[in-house]
Length: 472
Image (tube, rainbow, N blue to C red; front, side, top):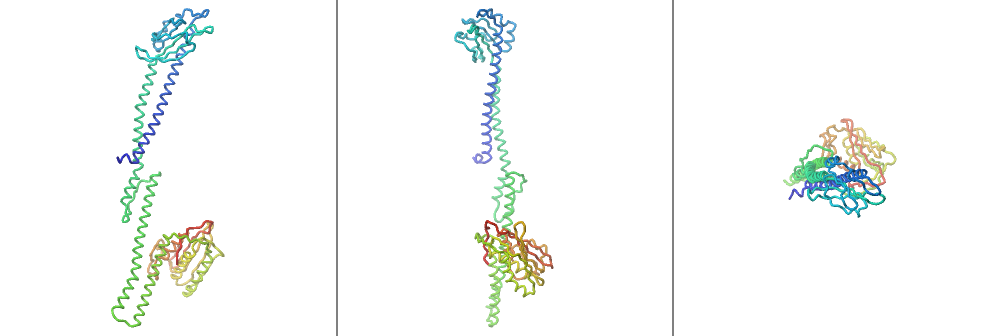
């Protein structure tokens, strides 16, 4: 019962059914066409023989003279061999001459026959079919005799019988073979789908390593199998990132919580002086501030990936960057760093102002944090492809090449020489904001010479963009 419900069986059934209907229609058409051609050939032969017989007859004063002299007895064997008979019938119904195998035909009413006609009969003795062509002999505008030419149809009927047998035998076999071929073809075509089903049943959140690994064929099923493997790969990577994110977040959250617990435990061991309590409160404040910062960063990252709010507005990027640079200029000067600004008059994009401020604030904060001497440069320019480049570069310690592919990953920390206080989420949030604005961030760095971050953002267009709103 399950077999009849399968797609393979239905494909085979419909293939066989459609082919059977087509073959039956073709067989009927071919049989009827052959039958018509054979009948037309027989009728043509009869008409030709009748004309030859009539041409041998002699007439005088509207009367038939000596019809026996028309066709000689010497020609009779040829007539027998061809299966042809003929006879001449007078106006009063007498058979004047008869040659050939068919002599016992019923005599027609000659007075009623004015036009030639064809008829098919069956011999009552031999049960053989034969074709009769009856044509009146016209002299001076009146019928004076009848000529009948008879042809045996045994060969034609045998040919039609063989053709009918071949059709009855071959059509069901061809339909059956087509159905079997359709089933095998469907079985081969749908095998990857069965494998996809079995693989999907084995997959769970704990194990996304299963793959189809089918040989790639550039057809619908092959593309489906490849897309399924690519989807599994993306899901596997996503779950791995989520697991790593949870592990890293748990570790970073555990650190301040452990410190807070240790401080409280130490204070509760015995009575302390006022200065010790004050120092403990300051330590608790630092740890809770760190905990709050980490929590807010995690919330920012979650909003970057899942928020559906559409807060799109026209933003003058140059004005935003000038205001932001003025805010960070005192921080840079406090470290004796020069801050150079190179911005055009106006660059307009569609986006969320608060999110863009957080993006560039993260980049400027990192540039100042990891630069001991030199300068910070903030510039922007318009590209020909409709994208805007915002460049934040510094002359700091730089990033080693092996770390560059990972710096936008969550909680990723570079070597200890760059271990400043932070959550490890700033660049991840910046990358998510850029992606939400249909842009991207690229980084170039040389150890000991500095780092350059390049943010690509699309210029304002007529239609709005769906941008996630990031709360600072």
